[in-house]
Amino acid sequence: MNSRSFILSTLVLGPAAAAALGAASTGTPFYGDPPDRTHPWAIHDRNRPQPPRVEPGTPSTQAQPGKPPSDAIVLFDGTAASLAKWESDTKPGTPPEPSKWIVKDGAMECVPKSGYIRTKEQFGDCHLHVEWSAPVKVQGDSQGRGNSGIFLMGLAEVQVLDNYDNPTYADGFAASVYGIAPPLANALRPPGEYQSIDIVFRRPLYRDGKLIDPGYITVFCNGVLVQDHTPLEGPGGHMKRSVARPFPDRGPLKLQDHGNPVRFRNIWYRPLPPRAAEGGTDGALTPEATLAKRKEIAAGLRAAAEKLPAAGTARFLQLAESLVYENESATAARVEQLAAAYVASLKALAGGAVEAKKGEAKSVQRALAYLARHGVVAPSYAPKSDLDAFTKARGWDDEKKK
Image (cartoon, rainbow, N blue to C red; front, side, top):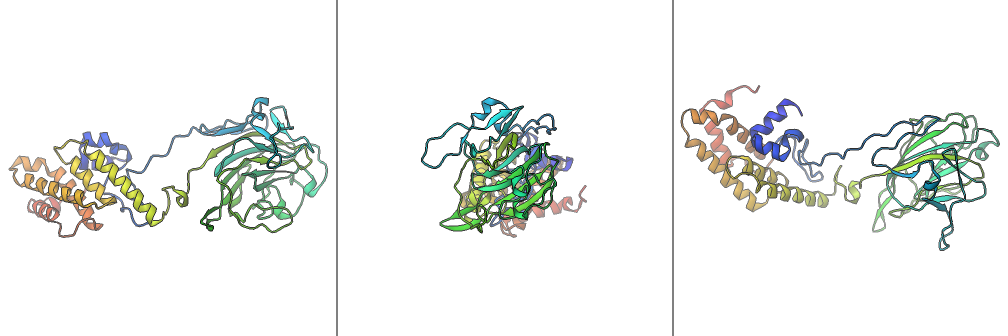
């Protein structure tokens, strides 16, 4: 936090209240543009939740896989024990069977004609990391060379194929969204080397049968962007045009057996938070969701204000801050009463006692000016007019801002 923000926090709330509220490290009230019809947060809002801490992982080398981030859920770590997290992709209604793929030198290898495999765990929107390697011995061409596939939720396929020096149809190229979108570039390493794939997956969202978000796939192959927020057009598929349709909330990750002994290692995912369309609070929300969130923030501020000292300005300014989110009538009346009482207390002071309150008075004046500027109170709001006149009479409003 810069020194100006720290000073503003201390002036507006006082050092003890600022520290108690965390304002000294997260921002100041009455600062950025307020919430609006589709955004529950003010600009630079100190009440907005802090991002969770994630310890970064380490990059992979050809000899050794890297370490996943601290919040990753590991699906395969190179051990035979982690293969137990997978099963054969049996037909619906049939009992699950253990995977017939094998673990070899820290990798999970497809046994041709053993069938697809899937995770026992099911999940939805995610950041997925997969490393795969085509056989070092090159056999076949086009779709017959190092072929497999990564199926998000068992439906949308990101193609796995040895296209290092192997042309094929573009929408079936390695890192394509199969049958929908070719990759932006061919960033593959030679066969036998591991390819590092990172996928950001957002499933389609429907509400009452109506599409509200088509879903997207972003893919990095060996650090190169190859799918740029590509809209899903359904799950894709072979030969037939894909048709948009709902996805389930959760599904397994599937890996394809296409008859080639492709190897996989270091498979993990990170769940993604909900989008605004499904209850998230970042980005533009519906007016209804915004209103509900603003009411929630205001209620939290009112409750926290009651824990602050009754003396001084901290409690009344936090109640005033709550009005930015919800102009609740009882709180508004209380704030007006407290503001008027504060101005009256200033007028009752004399001499040096008044000068000692200059910084505090000007911070309250800034808060009331913010409320008036953004329509929370009327421009003729009596406490604001009285305080403006009080500061003007003492020449405080003529001082240049430092």
